[in-house]
Image (cartoon, rainbow, N blue to C red; front, side, top):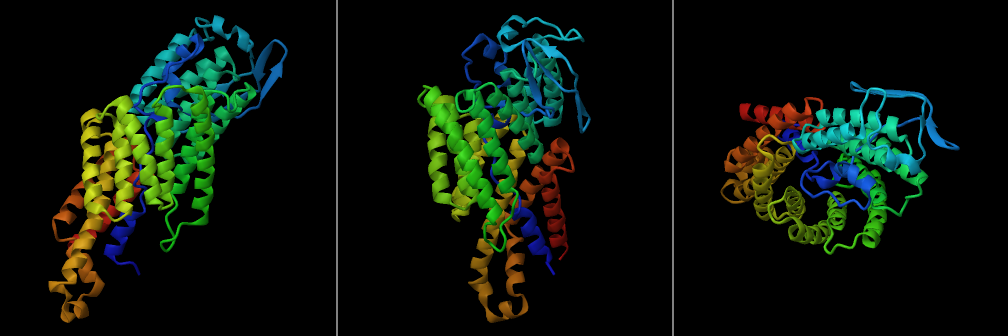
Length: 428
């Protein structure tokens, strides 16, 4: 049987500690990329990425595009695609004011996009998804389903699904976004395609991170998923290197950050630190020290340090990241909760290490080992200031996860398990 100390440790250690780069998943920190055409300027607010469900096949007809009737329902978001004809791509620049049958225009879609991005910034991902869904309806009716703005909208919804922990839905949406770019001949040739490819890599990264090590060993599926994500990040990086002339460049910095995450998942902490430090230096140059994007990279640097057993150093870096996020995002944002969770993990490890040292000194007497054994070490770990700090951070994280993400979210469930184990421990 698993005793209470082991249960608590399992609940803490199985939770992913790293954070995705915020800009690439509906982030609030990095600036939007400048668009190169008037059409892209119209959709600039869409660039934080999301996913859209367009399951029917798109068909080409001379003089226009149409799609088969399709209906898809997901968690209260009803998306109806009706059979209709759309103008060919060459005419799209002329329909900025064109209305849908409900008298909605692309200006209305832009307003929904802006509102959705503000909601994403505030961590209100479910409400943001409703805005993106409504925006998609407008884009499909006016622009058709073979248009780069539709692909961007779908990409945005995919990133929102990632924030909600719905990785399979995110992958499906991102696949559709990439399919649209392929139909438009943009595969490997546009920054927008590269962004969607990077987000697909993040979806596979998130899947890999959910798989806990088995007896301390990384499962083969983790290696498969991270290999796939590395390939996708590399494809995106090649496009950014060719098409983006800035030096340093924020998209390239984000790719370095994402690759660092993959090394962290595979316990390759030295390689992870190398990637993170490259990303951090460029982000600070572009965005300044006080940026959420910079704080997220610091959080993941701390995670790598923790993996290298540099606990005190990791705690200091976590605190830097928490201070920045708390100041910019407020105390009740999911990103802030994630850093609280990571600090709880770090204080847990520090407490266990300090308890082991005490057990090997004054508590190392043979009588102590005889009557308490390893359980005595765990008890010592939960009776000092490290335990109190861990308890505080777990409770703060759980409160935010439950109120913002809901009780069914994976993060909420793990934090709940940790709290139950902590309460049981206090009864001993």
